[in-house]
Image (cartoon, rainbow, N blue to C red; front, side, top):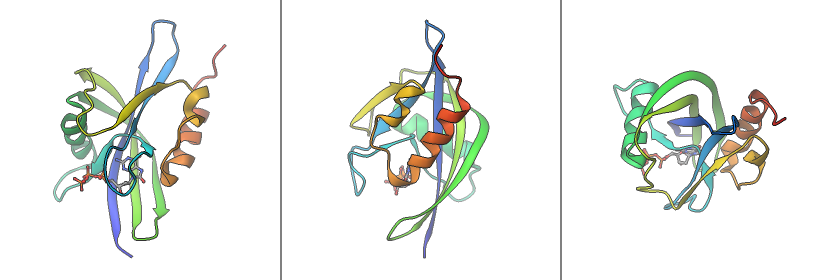
Length: 137
Ligand SMILES: Nc1nc2c([nH]c(=O)n2[C@H]2C[C@H](O)[C@@H](COP(=O)(O)OP(=O)(O)OP(=O)(O)O)O2)c(=O)[nH]1
């Protein structure tokens, strides 16, 4: 089966009340339209995952991110292809997260991470991230 190598940004921000929020986007086109994901895309030849991620977030959201720690690499079999997806913590350096390709976006608290319809490959990542975040007091 064909393998698609993708990189995804788990963009976090600390809000005024001290809570950490995660940015989730809803796909606006294609096979998975309507599903929720972490923004990102396919790694092109010659790119490091970090370079691909910075490029994709600039293209999709008009925003510069700093790519931080690697979280995990998701390996998932879709009916037509195998997905290998590197997930990284990211923070916004500059920009307003303009939705150029996505249908919608939400900032989610740890508790809200279970509230959106994640793409099949993302369900486990969302759980893992919730486990890494500090619960609300
Ligand atoms: N970006 C992203 N893609 C994901 C996630 N979960 C998941 O299953 N995918 C799948 C959907 C797509 O089949 C593939 C990513 O492709 P993409 O369409 O975002 O990549 P791209 O921007 O380079 O796309 P394109 O120019 O070829 O349309 O990975 C996720 O959290 N983020």
